[in-house]
Image (tube, rainbow, N blue to C red; front, side, top):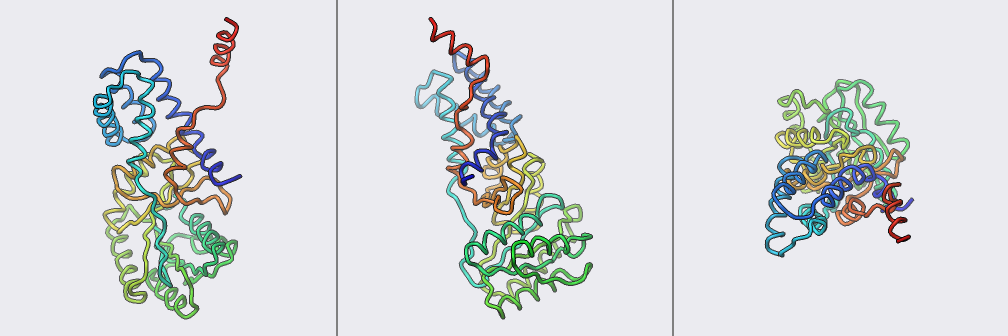
Length: 320
């Protein structure tokens, strides 16, 4: 399955739930009025685009409809696509411009941090980069062992200490080893204890100080891993993590298992953080760079299969 096919299939539930719902709503109206805009906004909110983003889209729609003199409700779908494309903006990839570059991976437990690191290791190694992983989530039981399974699977080295040891010390050893071995990328796992923000803030600050001191001037990414199936809860998590870490990008996992793909739009619009990777499956190569054009094309693709009722209507019209 090709890259676009994976993204298209991954967004199938979102497309069938949200986009199909919007089209059905627009087709039920014969004129553009305030009732239409209110129902559009409600449909977008139900599709996990978020209240703020749904309001922003509908406000822009009102302006565009007035400016362009649009009277047919069916034409609004193209405007929605245009607005969302603008909200997503230009794609931003990982900055791995120095040797070593450092990727700090944060996120609550269960969001998919460990599997994301494993898949990222596989991806970077397949691009010819030498990768070293720091097992700096030293507090969660079995976290180090789980990470070791994934690094072995990806064929990259792991720096680990005993459970309960100082996370910053693990990162320190990993950076020292990376410089000695000529490693391209150091990926640092971290604990996901968002319920105790003070401890997490102190821990991340200490890790960042170690990185800045031992790898001065290096390219540094801070990736927040979010579970797409949690919808707007993931957006709220991102807001809280923004308070404790300088997030440079989002990794959105489990996009293939949810109808809540609309959160991609609210993340860009409300948090102004680029989505840099999306997970569209469980295989090791199913972590893909986020491409706004592919996302839009896959999300707004017109349904290729007619429902039984639509097919019957089409047959009736052809007989007349």
